[in-house]
Length: 217
Image 1: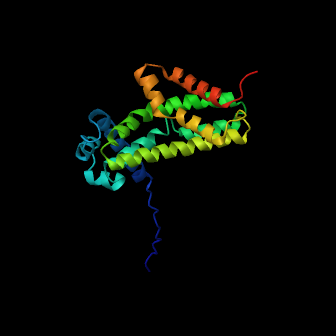
Image 2: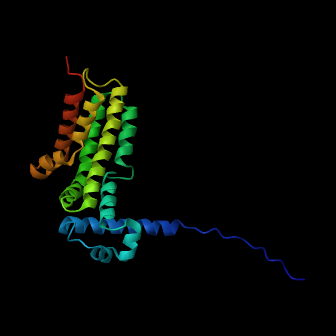
Image 3: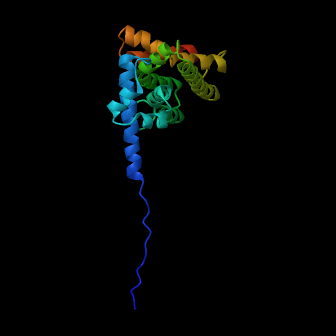
């Protein structure tokens, strides 16, 4: 008689491969961001990025479809801010538990300063390259639309809660919040005038409070 051998099916564990893929992606984005900001969009090559990141050019093409895709991915990564929880998620969670509109706007000011410190350099790169590159022009337009959608999201929240000053329409509130999230404010006050992140955060909050909330008696 022959002994029966019980066959067992081993489940393939892809977690290690996924972790490595994420690390490789981050290495590519880190290398690309350094080189884009140092040399500019036009002068930076995929070959140089691939060499620094330790991957092939083909890998970058498969993951990002070229230089414009890399810039878009860097910009989108920057919008999450610092830390394990994305800035927009922290913003939404905060506004749901807070009931004082001034506190909400103070927190928005802090988050705006945090995100602006990350995205402003790459946004300025996009703006510069948009003059000669159609893909960067499209990315600039897309980012503006995304910011406007996010501003409308916040303005709708303020209107639904009854926080807006009498006479402030949803459209006006959207424009104020959208303006506060622009990189131009950060570029002028922080990069050119040397304001600290805390000063910038207070300015953004004060701007929204003065522009949108009922004036004190």
